[in-house]
Image (cartoon, rainbow, N blue to C red; front, side, top):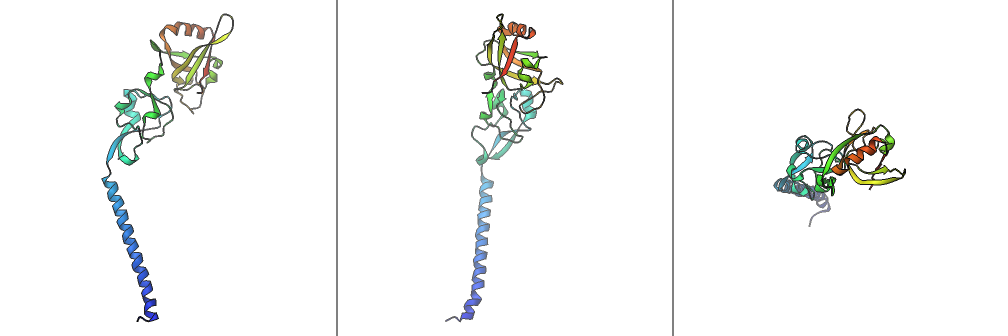
Length: 215
């Protein structure tokens, strides 16, 4: 039968052995995890090379500088992620997207939706000297606007609804996106070709009023 002293001496040894065993188990787990990760399948995804702002349109030209492809573990790839810039076609960013983000289809809408049901859409430019005509200069690239026209009876009525602002610029020619400071005075918008003459007539006579769509 073991003496009390021998039992006391063996307790630290047992604790030490248990500790070493725990370390060994932990090391095995870490090794297994790293091994599992190293074997995880990877896949290519499209990421933002720099910050993409709401209203940004992916053209063949700016895809070369604004987007890049990275290979990442499949487990971190979100649903609807783009794997190739060509899969995006010409798309419009719906939100501000930080640099390095994996791009997904729900962040964009097809550029075809910009013109809606227009039969013969054209891109036209306009400049306003009176900010009263353009929502106080708050319009930005990617916004939707409603355009009102003042008639001969002096009544102001909605003439065009949900018009897409392709580009908005300040007086220095800088393009303005959401959260950018400055007042927009020049714009490019999509409009039906048959409506262009009426639009410019209203603009020149200062009978147009532009409202920013908030929905």
